[in-house]
Each structure stands twice: as structure tokens, then as C-alpha cells.
Image (tube, rainbow, N blue to C red; front, side, top):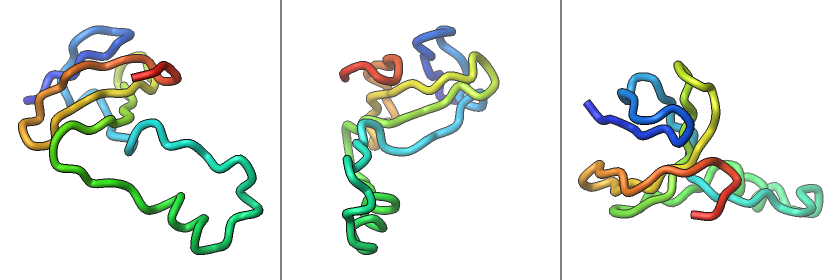
Length: 88
């Protein structure tokens, strides 16, 4: 089982968490100015890298807070976690 270190609660088993997508995705400043295709790209198109990746997680069965995680998608090794809204 993967142990994920919540930056607020400490290390916990993975079944306490939910994956919430790619981290550091900036919302467009003026979404109404985007074409339908560009808006669909923003909503649905994400990278699927092999290797080091910044992810967003939520500690559902703990503090309930979102945080970011730098994880290697090949080895599942977690490099570090840090609160949402802070720089990686």
C-alpha cells in the first residue's frame, strides 16, 4: 500500500485520499473569450507524463484539505507533498 504524507496530518494510507488531477492548472483569465474547442481543451486535456509529475490530492478521510504531490508515475515514489496554493 502506498503511504502518502499529508502536509497537514502526516503519513497516512492511500485509501484515505482521492486523486484530484494534475496540479498547477491555471484557469483562463477570460473563459468567455475562449472558443468551445479551447474551453474543452482546458477542461479535459491533461498531460499524462511518464516520470515526475505534479498532482493534486484531497485527504478525504482526514483533514479534508487539498494538497499537491510530486510523484514519479513509473515508480510511485512520492518526492514531496506541499499545501495547495504554494509553489512546488
